[in-house]
Length: 82
Image 1 (cartoon, helix red, strand yellow):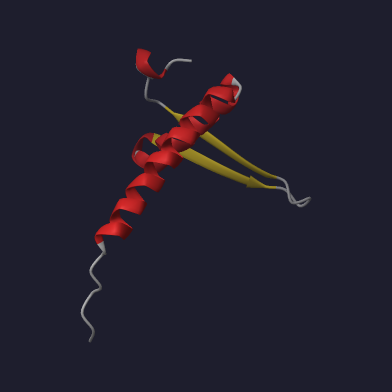
Image 2 (tube, rainbow, N blue to C red):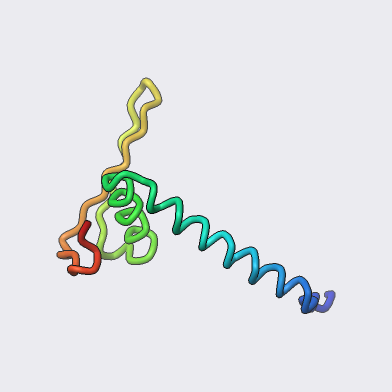
């Protein structure tokens, strides 16, 4: 059994910088999306973060069309209203 590799300080710094850059760019990109796209993304994020509060239905049609429907009984706070 081999010992786990230690992260080099430079690798850790690069990872942090990349994460910061990606977060900043995604934030700017989200501002450009239409409101309905932001709502869909927010619903998907809630499904990932709090699956117990969401109901997901995946419909697959013979044509190959996929439809994911997300529903929740949780009332959004004023912070999440768009």
